[in-house]
Structures are given as structure tokens and as C-alpha cells.
Amino acid sequence: MRWTDVNDIAIELEEAYPHVDVVNLRFTDLHKWVLALPGFADDPNRSNEKILEAIQAAWIEERA
Image (cartoon, rainbow, N blue to C red; front, side, top):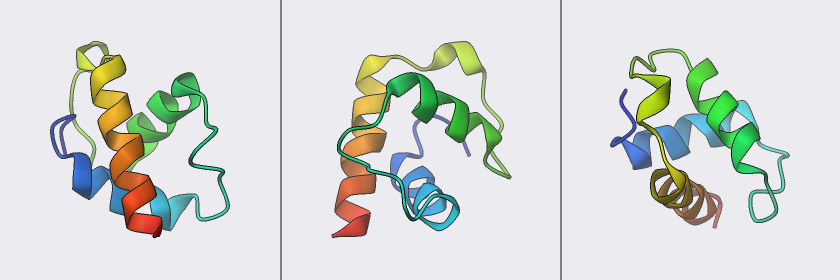
């Protein structure tokens, strides 16, 4: 997975962290959790606030 695989990341995060408050999370935590996902293989420095916001929105949608 790469940073652009927003929906796949959201699915994996929901499976790994089902009890996290997705609406009120810190982007520093989100960044760390994405990097820890199995199969994630992208440059940690390529993320930015816009990408993290997109992942958070997809995660919220995945949970709904």
C-alpha cells in the first residue's frame, strides 16, 4: 500500500484499531498507525495533512 491507497488504508486501520475515536484522533497517531500497517510500503515523508485528512474521512466512512 501507498499513501494514495486511502480506502485500503482505512479498511486496514478499522481492522487494526476498531475502538479508536476516528473523529477526534491526532494526525501524529494516524501517521504512526499507517506506517505500522502490514503491507504499507511508502516513504513516511510523502504524507501530508491533506492525505491524512483523506484517510481519516475514508476511515469514518468505513465505520459508518
